[in-house]
Image (cartoon, rainbow, N blue to C red; front, side, top):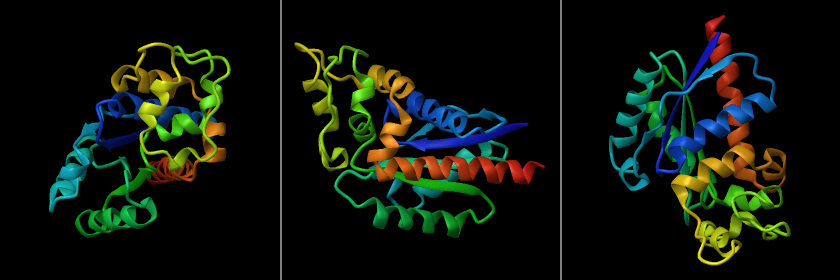
Length: 202
């Protein structure tokens, strides 16, 4: 059985990174079936928040799965609270696409905050020092990309399109989950989508 999951993301780095994370989460939770993840749809968050834009993106994502899979919307919360903003997006999807399986997850404050939560597992990877230690409260850091850049020697700045997928493939998921509420939300929603898709297909 194949479980299709389409993704809507906002950053260039998330296009290759989010499928990596979804597959790793599914494998860690013993999802038995093969995941089919079309190339994520990338749309700026500022555009998605406009009237009808999220709804159009969800419809496009649904078509990419033949309307038989799940849809994951993953955005950065930036300075907003995920607990208050995400339900608003869920409500919009409910009104326009009641027939679909979907989830909305917002990383607090940004996707790279999850790397800060799992920083110790990045030691020795991509130029990070062997003594790398994450901040006490990784989800309170605004400017996670800059934090990552400061941890590497010289002018080796964090590059989203190169580093994000590479780090997504090696960062320890249990470490992130222990320190990041928004990542636990991602794990929960990925497993829920997989379970519901499987039930509909059997």
